Length: 451
Image (tube, rainbow, N blue to C red; front, side, top):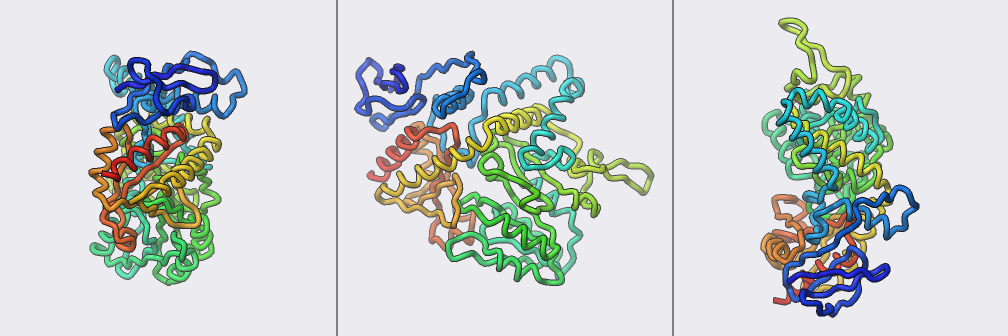
């Protein structure tokens, strides 16, 4: 079944193949509709040659522009932005253009040719988090970024790491590995009654002579809680304890200011709400950390110079945390995604949160479904329990043209056990989604839960 849209003023009339009008009549421009539990294909031809920057755009025109820049959103309802967002066309074009240059003139030569674009990537990433380019290291992903940060500490038996009950599973595994290998004590702060870490509990646990580090995942992967990263940062500054923040699900979704966070390290990725490519991320390293001589355990020749047979000299900036080899097509794609995010600005972030609230309101009306997100503040990660196998639901929804994802117990053992859930369904809108698409997704899910 194919849906065709006919422009009609500020709306579009939706017709089925053959010209018969849908029962849903008119919907918003660049929206979508649900017809008879069949996969959806939306046919829209936005004017990509129009110069939108020459006019003051209305919110609808801004949305149309974002969607025109995102070819993937015209084929599916993509509510898996916490997994991997749809990239702007310019990100894909930037990467493919560089790969083409590598094929035509050589990899090293294409890198040299692209130097200004590579430099711009560091500047743009710094701007996204309120830092300078010298404080940014590009790495493979947020987990590698956090591992590089952790490896800069010389842990000894009896040292303490304070973390949270909602930290990302890969991070929790790294903490437990340090406990097993090095005898480090891992302690988790208590949650507030409403959900999310209690900064007062962090303060109590960090007030310990062997506390070496506080580590926090700002927005967890398996629920929509936004933890009080700023409150914990204030605690760490007062206690004089280094602070590491995992902002993997934050950059591109919520504003980030590393100075306000008071963090020593901040890890992030490209593929999620930043809308960049997979396989690339970055690490912010504060001047404070650089000045105290922090560097990764396995420093690479990118991060240091071998100056004598038994001596090396560290890079004077965050690049001491990098490795020499890069997929520069990904670096350039990440830089273009950062440029796009900076251009979209806080208006895009506000829209993302508005859509998440609207999605929760719609889901609250669905039978056989329970919203699972807690906390004084919630993110654009919306999780629900259905009593069904969430992985199976993901496949069923995907077959209907709706992208979602599932989180299982291993993605958040403590939180999932407290909620008595083996798996949950995760939906994560972004600013290029529409409320009509939310209606599509909720109707599809409600229909599946009836069966």
